[in-house]
Image 1 (cartoon, one colour):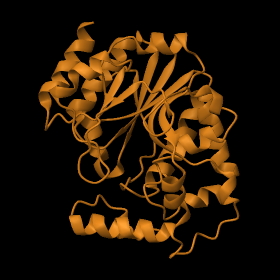
Image 2 (cartoon, helix red, strand yellow; image 1 turned 135 degrees about the vertical axis):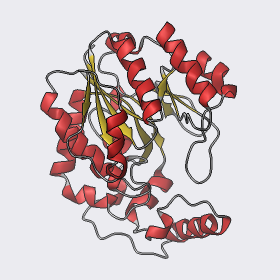
Image 3 (cartoon, helix red, strand yellow; image 1 turned 120 degrees about the vertical axis):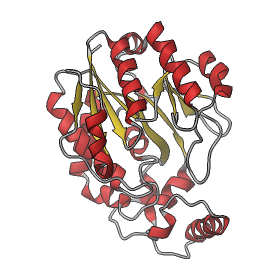
Length: 301
């Protein structure tokens, strides 16, 4: 399985090096890793291990949490990586805070060629509201105080009740199926090419992401699930609605705002019993023990 890995990195080169070593150890020379550094911290690239399979995105973007900069950065990365579309079958997207928790990823993808693996589920009210209204910059930040979170919630509720006008975009708002999703996952390269072309050809649709809130939370899922590739995403029963099968384990415990808290040793049993090959998020500065555990586990297998 020839695979490209896009790592979206912004801190902790020591931990990124562990992820790189795991991925290369599992791939038997058939995987290339492309790293996008948040332009604010691109100098840390000097601390990344040197290897012929480790490459760098040419034009790093500044990424600000909560706004459309992540969507724009992803599309720039896709365009660059599509120069090599004949070389790879899959693109894996992960962050510098992901780690492998089990070996055998490439063999699994090889056995299930063509399947799309991402975390997504239908979430009409949330995603429609986030995209169709302009959000003040103060509500796009990582809100932590109770007052800020309360004001944010009130703004969302008032938007839903049409207190604020929708964006003036020439789209049929009800013709779209709205999905929330995360960026990390595994995508056949033809799907990445479709997403890139769709974004270029549908400029009116892409206006949805201007001044929206957390626009990346649904970007890939929304486009894929409204495309001919939707039947390649496998769903399973979930608490509220069917949710797609993913190969990435997420901690069920969330931190402040919209972020997942750092993975701890308490999650090991659940991770090991899961069908996942990756997990997130790990933070070597907060929970070094669990980072060390999975790094050694994968490298020794």
